[in-house]
Image 1: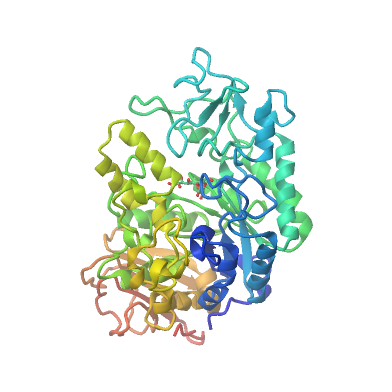
Image 2 (image 1 turned 90 degrees about the horizontal axis):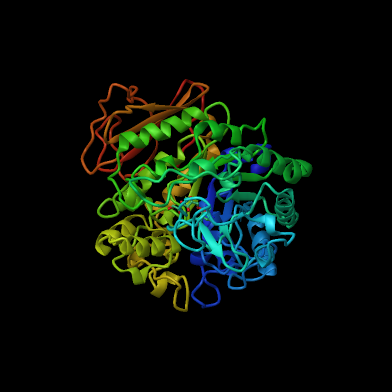
Length: 586
Ligand code: TEU
């Protein structure tokens, strides 16, 4: 049990039965004591991942970068950031991954580059530079004052606060950056840009990588149908507006994705994992992206369920509305039930820790972490485990701006306070939703800095690492780590988990999350109690449980079938028409 599945036999769509583990290199393991994680650190911990049974490692960016957005600002696509190591270190890591039967996908960040990338350095050098049109340059708005608020070509707001346009007095024009000003957007309308990106992708595939996670790839087509880029809607008297409708799933995005497939993947025969990060994507576009007939990508990261507790902005947090969460999850399961495929995730390097967010990181941390994993992994789609999620790592409880490192939170704090917001109030939003919650050092053991580094870490480890760490869990069969091993084994061993039809039950129930997966007469029933109170299993939607054996539970002690669910209890029961074998998840 719990070795990576032999995906070779799984054919072209091997990724349907795979489980992906995301590594955030800066925070995973530091092998040279400089306080920053690196490739050799990851290579040194591959057995932790192989032991978990995962099939694919997704590596967040490791390319040379000024690290303005922790590597999502790339200055050279064909090398390794020296802080993380060398190409030789990378090849050694890749060999180690493949030797253990796993695969490795790279993070492809090509909606934008770093402003220190030679392409942009050339582009900004003069108005008639051959690479000028590789980026989005525009003159100041008519009637606007260059470099002053209101002078921007459109009123679009950046994801990281402030205008999405930066004035460059060297050539008297603005350039577009949807993220930080050090992340100028590439102009995908320019075929030379697309060619250059495809060559980079081919270069890494030739080096042996197994696919790509594509960063904000649904933003590469900006809407030029009106000729000029249109303004966005500015709400309640604000100067800046929401440009998203003008660059999300834009008019040429599917043309570009089809071209990418033709130019990069189709000529190679073997199959890769291609997952597109698509903030704001609709189910209709998701079907277009993931329909195998169209060949664009294999799955998308949609954001609806991780925006479910957002108020007007992500920073004014609303308590979890389980009915709303179930409605969203059900909608995506139905929308991609026959065509396309979902990726399943709670956590990543942009989201706060789910056990603190949707679970209970106090008295029921272990039970709720196991429950959240059970519910997620048994939906139809490819599950993603973010580093530390398998240990139930939690939010830190930030109290001061000095503890933070993430440009998104730091920019938000500066802008909000400058606009008169109460700093305590702003910190409360960042404490709950800040990305640094996901970026603290991986908790390997109870030693100083959680065994992450012998130096001083770039960001402090969560003090709870003295209890919550890998060393304490890998030898404890009742640990969250082992629950993930069982879940991953179940997906590898039981086809109903991979291919079964999904049916949501009791959608209106405020605390019960229940659904079935059915395949050729086999039914898996999942029931989960999202509360600290006992929960009777008397809902009319629930099938008769009497003789359904328990396949997996998150409490050590078993109870009679049909007994009320204990606080944060999850049970997986399997009823099969006679003759179909019952794989055990022990
Ligand atoms: O994230 C895109 C994205 O949607 C996030 O910026 C999201 O809006 C925000 O983090 C949630 O508050 C991708 C990468 O995952 C992220 O780390 C990068 O910062 C961003 O793109 C730019 O490359």
